[in-house]
Image (cartoon, rainbow, N blue to C red; front, side, top):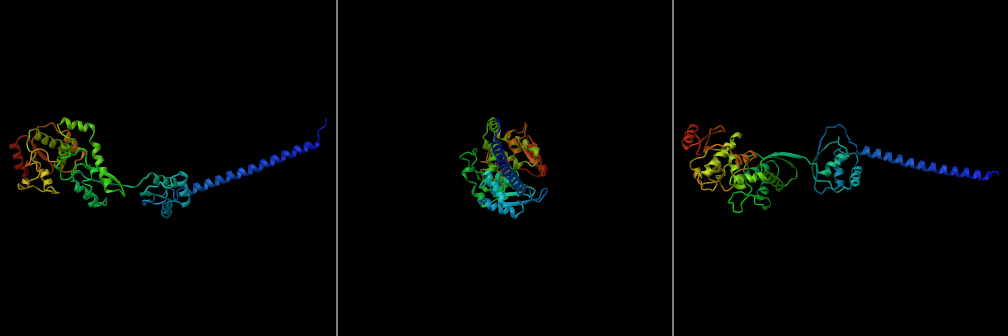
Length: 357
Protein backbone atom coordinates (compact mmCIF):
# COMPACT_ATOMS: atom_id res chain seq x y z
CA UNK A 1 0.00 0.00 0.00
CA UNK A 2 1.44 3.35 -1.04
CA UNK A 3 1.83 6.27 1.35
CA UNK A 4 -0.13 9.43 0.89
CA UNK A 5 2.38 12.14 -0.06
CA UNK A 6 0.08 14.82 1.35
CA UNK A 7 0.15 13.17 4.81
CA UNK A 8 3.94 13.06 4.67
CA UNK A 9 4.16 16.75 3.81
CA UNK A 10 1.69 17.57 6.63
CA UNK A 11 3.77 15.66 9.16
CA UNK A 12 6.95 17.41 8.04
CA UNK A 13 5.21 20.78 8.38
CA UNK A 14 4.07 20.00 11.90
CA UNK A 15 7.60 18.97 12.88
CA UNK A 16 8.99 22.19 11.43
CA UNK A 17 6.38 24.24 13.34
CA UNK A 18 7.13 22.43 16.63
CA UNK A 19 10.87 22.88 16.08
CA UNK A 20 10.42 26.55 15.23
CA UNK A 21 8.23 27.11 18.31
CA UNK A 22 10.71 25.26 20.51
CA UNK A 23 13.55 27.42 19.19
CA UNK A 24 11.59 30.60 19.93
CA UNK A 25 11.09 29.44 23.53
CA UNK A 26 14.75 28.64 23.74
CA UNK A 27 15.63 32.14 22.63
CA UNK A 28 13.22 33.63 25.17
CA UNK A 29 14.68 31.44 27.92
CA UNK A 30 18.22 32.33 26.89
CA UNK A 31 17.32 36.00 26.92
CA UNK A 32 15.85 35.67 30.40
CA UNK A 33 18.90 33.84 31.68
CA UNK A 34 21.20 36.41 30.10
CA UNK A 35 19.19 39.27 31.58
CA UNK A 36 19.22 37.66 35.01
CA UNK A 37 22.96 37.07 34.79
CA UNK A 38 23.58 40.66 33.74
CA UNK A 39 21.31 41.91 36.52
CA UNK A 40 23.18 39.74 39.02
CA UNK A 41 26.54 40.99 37.82
CA UNK A 42 25.29 44.58 37.99
CA UNK A 43 23.94 44.05 41.51
CA UNK A 44 27.19 42.41 42.57
CA UNK A 45 29.15 45.33 41.19
CA UNK A 46 26.88 47.79 42.95
CA UNK A 47 27.26 45.94 46.27
CA UNK A 48 31.01 45.34 45.99
CA UNK A 49 33.50 47.51 47.95
CA UNK A 50 34.16 50.94 46.52
CA UNK A 51 37.87 50.85 47.38
CA UNK A 52 39.09 47.26 47.86
CA UNK A 53 42.20 47.18 50.02
CA UNK A 54 41.71 50.72 51.31
CA UNK A 55 42.53 51.41 54.96
CA UNK A 56 40.44 54.58 55.11
CA UNK A 57 38.06 54.59 58.07
CA UNK A 58 34.98 56.73 58.63
CA UNK A 59 33.29 57.34 61.98
CA UNK A 60 29.62 57.48 61.11
CA UNK A 61 26.89 58.28 63.62
CA UNK A 62 23.42 56.87 62.96
CA UNK A 63 20.98 59.00 64.98
CA UNK A 64 18.05 57.38 66.79
CA UNK A 65 15.00 57.12 64.56
CA UNK A 66 16.96 57.39 61.30
CA UNK A 67 15.19 55.73 58.35
CA UNK A 68 16.87 53.47 55.80
CA UNK A 69 16.72 56.38 53.37
CA UNK A 70 18.50 58.67 55.86
CA UNK A 71 21.21 56.07 56.43
CA UNK A 72 21.63 55.43 52.69
CA UNK A 73 22.17 59.16 52.11
CA UNK A 74 24.81 59.28 54.87
CA UNK A 75 26.65 56.24 53.52
CA UNK A 76 26.69 57.51 49.94
CA UNK A 77 27.80 60.97 51.08
CA UNK A 78 30.76 59.44 52.94
CA UNK A 79 31.76 57.35 49.92
CA UNK A 80 30.94 54.03 51.55
CA UNK A 81 28.35 52.66 49.09
CA UNK A 82 27.88 53.03 45.34
CA UNK A 83 24.14 53.41 45.16
CA UNK A 84 21.39 54.22 47.66
CA UNK A 85 18.84 52.16 45.76
CA UNK A 86 20.78 48.91 45.97
CA UNK A 87 21.52 49.50 49.68
CA UNK A 88 17.83 49.93 50.46
CA UNK A 89 16.89 47.05 48.14
CA UNK A 90 19.25 44.77 50.01
CA UNK A 91 17.68 45.80 53.33
CA UNK A 92 14.19 45.17 51.96
CA UNK A 93 15.23 41.81 50.50
CA UNK A 94 16.45 40.81 53.97
CA UNK A 95 13.28 42.16 55.56
CA UNK A 96 15.34 44.47 57.79
CA UNK A 97 14.67 47.88 56.32
CA UNK A 98 13.53 49.25 59.72
CA UNK A 99 15.97 47.32 61.93
CA UNK A 100 19.07 49.52 61.66
CA UNK A 101 20.54 50.30 65.07
CA UNK A 102 21.53 53.81 66.11
CA UNK A 103 25.06 54.50 67.30
CA UNK A 104 28.58 55.33 66.20
CA UNK A 105 30.13 53.00 63.64
CA UNK A 106 33.62 52.66 62.20
CA UNK A 107 33.18 51.78 58.52
CA UNK A 108 35.39 51.86 55.44
CA UNK A 109 35.15 51.78 51.64
CA UNK A 110 36.96 48.42 51.66
CA UNK A 111 33.79 46.91 53.10
CA UNK A 112 31.09 45.54 50.82
CA UNK A 113 27.52 46.74 51.16
CA UNK A 114 26.70 43.33 52.63
CA UNK A 115 29.30 43.89 55.38
CA UNK A 116 28.07 47.41 56.08
CA UNK A 117 24.47 46.24 56.33
CA UNK A 118 25.56 43.44 58.67
CA UNK A 119 27.34 45.93 60.96
CA UNK A 120 24.33 48.22 61.09
CA UNK A 121 21.84 45.43 61.74
CA UNK A 122 23.90 43.79 64.46
CA UNK A 123 24.75 47.06 66.18
CA UNK A 124 28.53 46.66 65.91
CA UNK A 125 29.07 50.17 67.27
CA UNK A 126 32.41 51.62 68.34
CA UNK A 127 33.31 51.04 71.99
CA UNK A 128 35.80 53.17 73.92
CA UNK A 129 37.84 51.98 76.92
CA UNK A 130 37.16 53.85 80.15
CA UNK A 131 39.17 52.89 83.23
CA UNK A 132 37.83 53.38 86.75
CA UNK A 133 40.78 52.85 89.13
CA UNK A 134 40.52 50.90 92.37
CA UNK A 135 40.14 52.84 95.58
CA UNK A 136 37.96 55.70 94.31
CA UNK A 137 34.87 56.75 96.20
CA UNK A 138 31.60 56.58 94.29
CA UNK A 139 31.57 60.37 93.88
CA UNK A 140 35.15 60.38 92.60
CA UNK A 141 34.20 57.71 90.05
CA UNK A 142 31.19 59.73 88.92
CA UNK A 143 33.32 62.86 88.64
CA UNK A 144 35.82 60.97 86.50
CA UNK A 145 33.08 59.71 84.17
CA UNK A 146 31.56 63.17 83.83
CA UNK A 147 34.94 64.83 83.20
CA UNK A 148 35.66 62.34 80.41
CA UNK A 149 32.37 63.13 78.73
CA UNK A 150 30.41 60.02 79.70
CA UNK A 151 27.50 61.78 81.31
CA UNK A 152 26.30 64.64 83.45
CA UNK A 153 27.51 64.74 87.05
CA UNK A 154 24.14 65.82 88.43
CA UNK A 155 22.47 62.97 86.55
CA UNK A 156 24.98 60.51 88.01
CA UNK A 157 24.47 61.83 91.54
CA UNK A 158 20.69 61.62 91.16
CA UNK A 159 21.11 57.86 90.63
CA UNK A 160 22.80 57.28 93.99
CA UNK A 161 19.45 56.54 95.61
CA UNK A 162 17.87 54.79 92.62
CA UNK A 163 16.28 51.58 94.01
CA UNK A 164 17.06 49.77 90.75
CA UNK A 165 20.77 50.06 91.58
CA UNK A 166 20.57 49.28 95.28
CA UNK A 167 22.89 46.35 96.13
CA UNK A 168 21.10 43.18 97.20
CA UNK A 169 23.75 42.69 99.89
CA UNK A 170 23.17 46.10 101.50
CA UNK A 171 21.32 45.74 104.83
CA UNK A 172 18.04 47.65 104.94
CA UNK A 173 19.09 49.46 108.13
CA UNK A 174 22.66 50.28 107.05
CA UNK A 175 23.54 53.84 108.12
CA UNK A 176 25.78 54.54 105.16
CA UNK A 177 26.78 57.78 103.49
CA UNK A 178 26.33 56.62 99.88
CA UNK A 179 24.17 53.59 98.92
CA UNK A 180 26.45 52.65 96.00
CA UNK A 181 29.75 53.14 97.83
CA UNK A 182 31.97 50.14 97.27
CA UNK A 183 29.50 48.42 94.95
CA UNK A 184 30.62 49.87 91.61
CA UNK A 185 33.39 47.57 90.47
CA UNK A 186 36.58 49.38 89.36
CA UNK A 187 37.63 48.09 85.97
CA UNK A 188 38.19 49.05 82.33
CA UNK A 189 34.84 49.23 80.58
CA UNK A 190 34.15 49.43 76.84
CA UNK A 191 31.41 52.01 76.37
CA UNK A 192 29.57 53.07 73.21
CA UNK A 193 28.62 56.67 72.51
CA UNK A 194 25.06 57.40 73.58
CA UNK A 195 25.15 55.14 76.62
CA UNK A 196 23.18 56.62 79.52
CA UNK A 197 24.38 57.34 83.06
CA UNK A 198 22.05 54.64 84.36
CA UNK A 199 23.39 52.06 81.90
CA UNK A 200 26.98 52.80 82.95
CA UNK A 201 26.26 52.44 86.65
CA UNK A 202 24.11 49.36 86.05
CA UNK A 203 27.01 47.76 84.16
CA UNK A 204 29.42 48.50 87.01
CA UNK A 205 26.93 47.18 89.55
CA UNK A 206 26.40 44.00 87.56
CA UNK A 207 30.15 43.48 87.31
CA UNK A 208 30.48 43.65 91.10
CA UNK A 209 27.52 41.32 91.59
CA UNK A 210 29.11 38.79 89.23
CA UNK A 211 31.99 38.43 91.68
CA UNK A 212 29.70 37.53 94.56
CA UNK A 213 29.53 33.87 93.63
CA UNK A 214 28.23 30.99 95.71
CA UNK A 215 31.82 30.32 96.78
CA UNK A 216 32.17 33.98 97.82
CA UNK A 217 29.02 33.79 99.98
CA UNK A 218 30.05 30.46 101.49
CA UNK A 219 33.44 31.89 102.45
CA UNK A 220 31.84 34.91 104.15
CA UNK A 221 29.82 32.50 106.27
CA UNK A 222 32.97 30.58 107.19
CA UNK A 223 34.42 33.88 108.40
CA UNK A 224 31.28 34.60 110.41
CA UNK A 225 30.61 37.70 108.31
CA UNK A 226 28.07 39.04 105.83
CA UNK A 227 28.78 40.06 102.24
CA UNK A 228 28.36 43.74 103.12
CA UNK A 229 30.97 43.40 105.87
CA UNK A 230 33.42 41.72 103.51
CA UNK A 231 32.86 44.52 100.98
CA UNK A 232 33.52 47.06 103.72
CA UNK A 233 36.69 45.31 104.86
CA UNK A 234 37.91 44.94 101.27
CA UNK A 235 37.46 48.68 100.71
CA UNK A 236 39.61 49.42 103.76
CA UNK A 237 42.30 47.06 102.48
CA UNK A 238 42.15 48.79 99.09
CA UNK A 239 42.68 52.21 100.65
CA UNK A 240 45.44 51.10 103.04
CA UNK A 241 47.47 48.91 100.67
CA UNK A 242 49.76 50.54 98.13
CA UNK A 243 51.93 47.48 97.57
CA UNK A 244 50.04 44.61 95.97
CA UNK A 245 51.51 41.72 97.95
CA UNK A 246 50.75 43.45 101.27
CA UNK A 247 46.98 43.14 100.86
CA UNK A 248 46.71 39.69 102.54
CA UNK A 249 48.90 40.95 105.41
CA UNK A 250 46.79 44.06 105.97
CA UNK A 251 43.68 41.88 105.77
CA UNK A 252 45.16 39.60 108.44
CA UNK A 253 45.75 42.56 110.79
CA UNK A 254 42.14 43.69 110.47
CA UNK A 255 40.75 40.16 110.87
CA UNK A 256 42.95 39.54 113.93
CA UNK A 257 41.88 42.80 115.56
CA UNK A 258 38.19 42.07 114.90
CA UNK A 259 38.55 38.66 116.55
CA UNK A 260 40.17 40.25 119.62
CA UNK A 261 37.64 43.13 119.72
CA UNK A 262 40.44 45.67 119.23
CA UNK A 263 39.49 48.88 117.44
CA UNK A 264 40.66 48.80 113.83
CA UNK A 265 42.33 52.23 114.01
CA UNK A 266 42.35 52.63 110.23
CA UNK A 267 43.53 56.01 108.95
CA UNK A 268 41.69 55.33 105.70
CA UNK A 269 38.33 55.34 107.49
CA UNK A 270 39.13 58.67 109.16
CA UNK A 271 40.03 60.19 105.79
CA UNK A 272 36.64 59.02 104.52
CA UNK A 273 34.89 60.41 107.60
CA UNK A 274 36.55 63.77 106.92
CA UNK A 275 35.59 63.56 103.22
CA UNK A 276 39.19 64.09 102.17
CA UNK A 277 40.35 62.95 98.76
CA UNK A 278 44.12 62.69 99.30
CA UNK A 279 46.48 60.83 101.59
CA UNK A 280 47.68 63.81 103.63
CA UNK A 281 48.95 62.91 107.14
CA UNK A 282 46.27 62.96 109.82
CA UNK A 283 46.54 64.97 113.03
CA UNK A 284 45.55 63.83 116.49
CA UNK A 285 42.58 66.20 116.24
CA UNK A 286 41.47 64.42 113.05
CA UNK A 287 41.32 61.14 114.96
CA UNK A 288 38.67 62.61 117.26
CA UNK A 289 36.12 63.31 114.51
CA UNK A 290 32.72 62.03 115.64
CA UNK A 291 31.71 59.77 112.79
CA UNK A 292 30.66 56.12 112.65
CA UNK A 293 33.35 55.79 109.98
CA UNK A 294 36.07 56.76 112.49
CA UNK A 295 37.50 53.38 113.53
CA UNK A 296 39.80 55.11 116.04
CA UNK A 297 36.70 56.14 117.96
CA UNK A 298 34.24 53.34 117.26
CA UNK A 299 34.94 49.60 117.46
CA UNK A 300 34.29 47.17 114.66
CA UNK A 301 33.83 47.82 110.98
CA UNK A 302 32.47 51.14 109.72
CA UNK A 303 28.83 51.19 108.46
CA UNK A 304 29.85 50.45 104.89
CA UNK A 305 32.61 50.54 102.29
CA UNK A 306 34.79 53.64 102.05
CA UNK A 307 35.87 53.12 98.41
CA UNK A 308 35.64 50.71 95.51
CA UNK A 309 37.67 47.55 96.19
CA UNK A 310 39.32 45.70 93.34
CA UNK A 311 39.33 41.94 92.95
CA UNK A 312 42.68 41.53 94.75
CA UNK A 313 41.38 43.33 97.84
CA UNK A 314 38.18 41.29 97.81
CA UNK A 315 40.28 38.13 97.64
CA UNK A 316 42.46 39.34 100.52
CA UNK A 317 39.41 40.11 102.67
CA UNK A 318 38.15 36.56 102.09
CA UNK A 319 41.52 34.83 102.43
CA UNK A 320 43.88 36.82 104.68
CA UNK A 321 47.44 35.74 105.28
CA UNK A 322 47.92 33.19 108.06
CA UNK A 323 49.85 35.50 110.39
CA UNK A 324 49.25 36.92 113.88
CA UNK A 325 50.12 40.55 113.18
CA UNK A 326 48.02 43.14 115.00
CA UNK A 327 49.70 46.36 113.81
CA UNK A 328 51.21 47.97 110.74
CA UNK A 329 52.73 51.36 110.06
CA UNK A 330 53.70 53.08 106.84
CA UNK A 331 57.35 53.39 105.94
CA UNK A 332 56.52 56.48 103.91
CA UNK A 333 57.26 54.85 100.55
CA UNK A 334 53.93 53.05 100.15
CA UNK A 335 55.05 49.90 101.97
CA UNK A 336 54.35 48.96 105.59
CA UNK A 337 56.15 47.30 108.46
CA UNK A 338 54.09 44.83 110.48
CA UNK A 339 54.34 43.89 114.15
CA UNK A 340 52.80 41.63 116.80
CA UNK A 341 52.91 43.84 119.90
CA UNK A 342 52.04 47.43 120.74
CA UNK A 343 55.56 48.08 122.03
CA UNK A 344 57.07 46.89 118.75
CA UNK A 345 54.56 48.94 116.81
CA UNK A 346 55.36 52.10 118.74
CA UNK A 347 59.08 51.64 118.03
CA UNK A 348 58.29 51.27 114.31
CA UNK A 349 56.05 54.35 114.37
CA UNK A 350 58.81 56.38 116.04
CA UNK A 351 61.37 55.08 113.55
CA UNK A 352 59.34 56.01 110.51
CA UNK A 353 57.77 59.13 111.98
CA UNK A 354 54.24 58.05 111.16
CA UNK A 355 51.35 55.96 112.32
CA UNK A 356 48.54 56.18 114.81
CA UNK A 357 47.75 52.45 114.59
